[in-house]
Length: 631
Image (cartoon, rainbow, N blue to C red; front, side):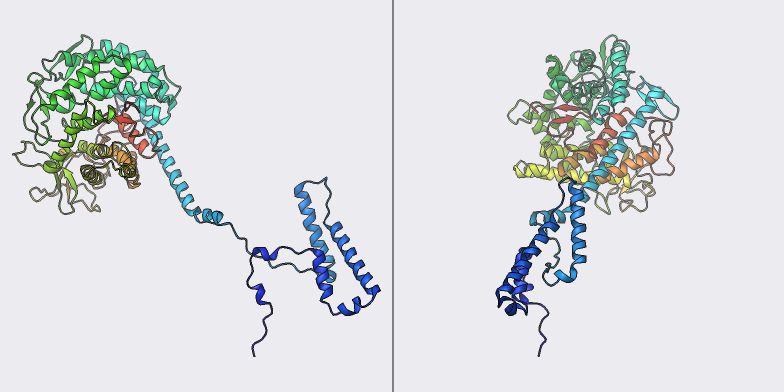
C-alpha cells in the first residue's frame, strides 16, 4: 500500500495568484474552527465570548505591530518593518506558529515581454561590444591622420608633399600646398578641429597668392586634388547651407572664392584647345595652356574633371565651368569604342583616340568611374540629358566582363587584365592596384548608392546590376588578397596573375601561408607601395552597400599593416620600396592622397553609415565628397 503524500495534490497545481496572503482573521478563525477544542469551546456562551475576545485581541496586536512612524524615511521605515516582523516571529513563534502559515517562496516570474528582452541580452551586449570595437578602431584612424598631419606641419607646411625620412617638403604638383587642401575635408569629417583651423588659415593666407604666382600645373591633378578639395571643404563647412561639420577655419566663401580663382585659370586648358579635348597643362601665372610633351592627353585625365566643374557652376551660378567640362564627355560619346572600352590616349588636336592600348589601370581608370558618378551627380534621372552617360557606363561594364575579366590558377581569383594591343592582340594578365577602384564603382552603379537590401526590396536591380555586384565582390576579394599574399600585408603597385597562358616562378609575394601565393605574381619593378587608397575605397563602398562586416575586417587588417610598416616615428608615413621582404625598405615619400583618400576611407569604413551617405554624395576620384543634385 502506497504511503500518503505529505501534501495535498491541490498544492502541486499552483500559480502565483494562489499564494496571495490570507487575512489574519481568516487564519485564526479557520484554526479555531478546525482545532480539537472546537466543540467544547463553542458549547457555552462563556467559551464563545472568550474566543471572540481572543480573536479581537490578536487582531489589535497585529494592527499595532504593523504601524510605523510617519517621520522616518521610506528606506528607514522598510528597515524598521522588517526588523519588527523578524522580532515578532522570533518572540512569538511558539504562540503563532500554529495559526500563521506563510505560502511557499516561488521563483520570480517575468512578464513575457521582459523575458524576451532578457533572452536578447547576449545579442544586445554583443552588438554593443561590436560597436565599441569599431568606435575604437575609428579613433585609431583619426590618431593616424593626426600623426601624418603633424609630420607634414612640422617639416613641410605649404609644400605639396612630405618626405618623412628626410624631414623636409617637396613640390611635385605645382607648389599649391596640395597636402593642405587634400587633407582639409578629411579633417572636417573626422572633427579634427585643430587641423581644420591650421589648414583653413593657410588656405586663407597663402593659396590665392600661390595661384597667381606659380607656374605649370597638370589640369587633372590640380582639379581633383586642389579644386575638388576646396569645393568639398566649402560644402562641408556650411557653404550653400551644406553640412556644417565644424565652426573652425575661415568662412566657407573663402574656399569658394579661391576655387573660382583657380578654376578661371584652369579653364584655359579647354578654351585654348582646337577641339573639345583639353590640353594637359596650364601655366598659372601667365595664364596659358599647353599640350603634353608628346602632344597627347590621357583619356582618364580629360574625362575626370566634370564632377568638380559641374559643382562649381552650381554653387557659383556661372555655367561656363560645367559647359566646358561636359563638352568632353559629349564628344567622347560619339567616338568609336571596343564594346564600350576606350584607348588610354586621346589627341586634343584631332579629338580622336590614339593607339589601341585598353586598360582600367593608369590613364584609363577614372574615365569609367566618372561615367556613372557624373550621371549620379545630376540626380540619377533616366529621362535627363545625361542618360547617355549611364548608357556608356553599362556598355563599358559589359565590355569589361566580356574582354577583360579572367580567373587565375590554381585557385580562381577573378581579375581584370589589359589589352595592350587592342582587341585583336594578346591578353595581358596584368592588374594595377589602381584597378581596385572598380569593385566600388561597380557596386555604386548597381544600387545607385542604396543598400543592396533596399534596392532589392524596391525592385531596382536589373540582371546586369546583379552581375556587376557579383563581379564587384569577386574583385574586392582579389584586391584584398593582393595585400594578404605579401610578407608585409601591403599590396604592390602592380600584380600579374598566373593563367594557363602566363606563368613565372620565384616571384611570389613572400607570404607562404597565403592560399593564393601561387596565383599572384609580383615582378621586382612592381613591388613598391605608394599608400594608395583604391582597395580601401572599394571596401568602404561595398560595406555600405552590402552591409557585410567582412569588408570592415579586411580593411582593419590593411590599416594595421600600414601602421606597422609605413609609420615614421618623427611624423608622417612613408611609401615602401618592396612589400615582399621584411623589413621593407622605405621610399621617403608621403603622397597627398594618403591623408585625402586612404585615411578618409578607413575612417568612413569603420564608422556610422549615415555619415556622407552614398545616395546623397558622390566622391570625386580624390575622395572629396560633393552633394548630389536634389539630395
